[in-house]
Image (cartoon, rainbow, N blue to C red; front, side, top):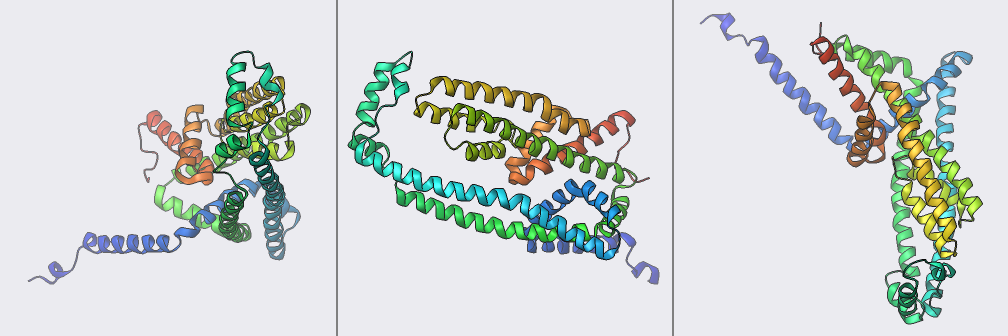
Length: 360
């Protein structure tokens, strides 16, 4: 028997190594599965603030400056996130106590018919009769609000508190990952470029650039536009006398990060105004809110997200909504970036007839 025939071929050696490597990578991902979201969040934030990071590095060179700058930027991100969050939680806790007191009073004394009920153009008599039977008396109000008690609200608040604690731990790991990503930016970027070149060939640079532009465009289109919608609606809430306008404006800004998501907050604001007897105010809130959402979601947001990556609005919407359904809030940023890369590869394939990921 020839000695060379007994030697394993290159393919026979390669496949066991590939299988073993895949098993090792899968095991590593399984170990780190609870922290993968924090790592991806760190990457997203690092990409978003990288232009600012590089401008500050030019003014503050040196290794020690890199470490201090990474620490300062990480602390800045923490403050930007935590300060509004703490204020919102404190305000919400106060609201829960007030709502609990109102529910107890309603069960004891009933809920009197609001003033706007007499000005309803159609069905005023039927609505007044229903209110008198189901809400005006203590028995009726207690029957309608039997599932809402002060104890239940406190229990829900505790559950929310435990959820916030879990997310606080994830956020701490996100900040830790962000610090190391900023501190070791050059080394990590060089390694990513080298690995991308080996895996995807010359197209790796364009794929990375497309993903980075998409993430930044998505941040501008979601967060900045959402903050703009929340600011405009806060002014409208203040002018129309909506209860708790600052808290409601903050929640509107958060909901506005999802396309058409702020409309739910407009309904709440309109309902609060109806409870105060302001039918015209409720109509103005809904009309102005829908106008703001229409302009932001049909013109401003597609221009910011799609303009940065030449991504059609349909694929922007699919990336945002599909990413949110699959990955939660993180999917709002990962989804459009994925769609942008896929659309870019499709255009390259159609235009050139060659696989964009082929290694030359």
